[in-house]
Amino acid sequence: MNRNAAIGVFDSGMGGLTVMRALCRALPRERFIYLGDTARLPYGTKSADTVKRYALQATEALRRRGVKMIVLACNTASVALPELQTAFAPLPVMGVIAPGADAAIAATPAGPIAVIATEGTVKGGAYVRAIEARGRVGVVQQACPLFVPMSEEGLIAGPIADAIAHRYLDPLLATVPRPKCLLLGCTHYPVLKDVIAKVAGDAIVLVDSAETAARAAIKLLAENDLNADRSENGPPQFLVTDAPDRFARVGEIFFGQAIDPGCVSLVDLQ
Ligand code: DGL
Image (cartoon, rainbow, N blue to C red; front, top):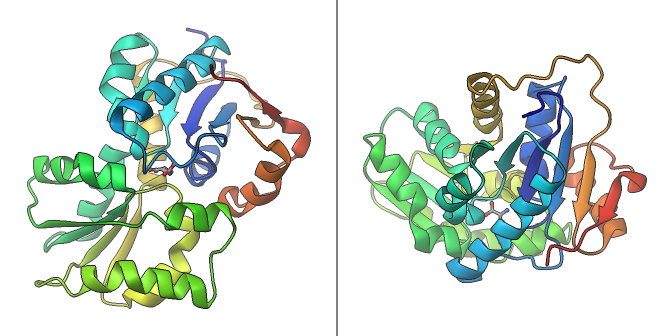
């Protein structure tokens, strides 16, 4: 494996940019190629078999571009993580579920943890398993299917966003005992942090997995002896399966910095 090759980051759309933002900060010497499957988003309402097929195609597209490691920056696609790790070995492939579970437990040492995620992630129960495997019980979950299209639309504040957040969060917050921690189990949700925090109130800690995922990526690179040894990293490259101009425009909300449209290209995964 070439230690100066790029790291591949994958999500169904723009959500993974919230993770890539943390990765770019934590790993300033690394180069990144981001792949957003914008033509087939959302993954969260699709069957596990379909999501696995899409995740295999996306990982293959990144592998063909010579990446040295893959970060699956999509909780929903993490249903495919074991298959991807086997199929693409020795290429290291990591997900965001384990870092998310670690972050939730670190944020609140006791009490129930509430997880909001896509329908697919909730149904698959990956967070319940990961958190319980770390010795915590009392996980409650809520699927928030409209949060992904809302955020991809840039609808991240205002009365409509508030009303939808209330609809999803009120029942969850009424759970007894009241959760102490609200884990954002979808990489799209950090852009809705303000509205979620407003509805959830001060008594609950909001946690997203981006920073812990970045720390897990640092560890995985070191374990595989894959740290880049050059000083120049170059701008990130973005691949999308549809609407590159829209990705460059709206993606800024997720990435936290402007995306040069010249760095976004179309790719066909099939
Ligand atoms: N961002 C993805 C996640 O973390 C899912 C979005 C979608 O439904 O496609 O689960």
